[in-house]
Image (cartoon, rainbow, N blue to C red; front, side):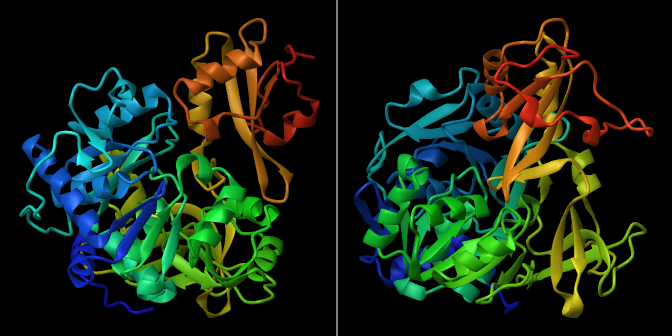
Length: 510
């Protein structure tokens, strides 16, 4: 893949497309169409309002918007104001939203007009409400504001699950974002004729490819409304009606689309976020024009490697690195593994995030010096175990810690356990994952009650106050004690099978 990636910011390359074809359609959302020129003018007005509200370069602005016509103008407006965006999913618990706003230091929050009542009570900053045509308080000036273009400034901050029980904010720069978007579009882009389906939540970092890839090439983005994004049949209609050429989803998402009848030989499909089973890869490959398996953690900006799936795959590989990316496989002693060797995958290059917001200790632990790079170069320890095959191709083997991925969402089991133990009726807890079917992973919570086992509904409500839906276990089981191995660690093999669970946890010893 070409390593000569443009320097600058995604927003400036989109502005170049605005200047080249201002009347071309850029965004389709909720039945509305925004031309490149109108997208730019709305973003400029939002940027000027943000500047008037005192936003500063390198500082986050909260964006709590549905997937409608206001979303892309708001995100680009934040960048034009010199700030970074903090995506806030409307479905998250209020407590989690409040934590993210406070931890990130966001002083301004953007929401849809009339939705100020949904702003977390603890947020004391300014609120900018948007209508379909931009800020509710209009600015007559829709010219581009003058702000310094610095690719090292933050583009966004996205929060992921934290192993210590607290979400952690990953700080991604403009340089890193442009590197991945341009690198991927060079491989899978379709130019001005390309139409990308954007169905992923903006709080999930893979949404960046769906939102910006088409706009860098002069194509268009089809934003799936929030309700349609969770409805496979509705997504199939959008793909057909809007002439979508590129669709990205997790393996779990693709299973739902295939079950709904997805069969589009004109679509280039991307799959990532979870391990891709061979059987699913083969079925999906038969129904699309091209299939690209992509891999990468949030800390290395969306994707770091890609592999084009052949017509009849016998195995699934992570493939090779994106532009300006280096993939190291290191054994337990930190030495490079040779062909056939296994080890932890460490990633270096332009895709690396700046680190974690307000977590210098964790940043230093995970972002370590790269002894094979230029002086001062860093690499990210992914915690993923891989094998280096012949020719350098990588095969994903699993995790070396307790982190899991379900439906593409990264989940630290320790965070769920920490929240469970905070329930007054729970003395101890452990959360694990069981496979209900190929690729169908379920969270199982085992708890030691203080006395009588709490009701499942009460446990769910307790967790829902601080955790998103995808982090709430599907099954709860009460046990007398957490079994330990001879080394003093939790003995996962000794935990009872979830098939014995009922909707109400059994009492200890039952």
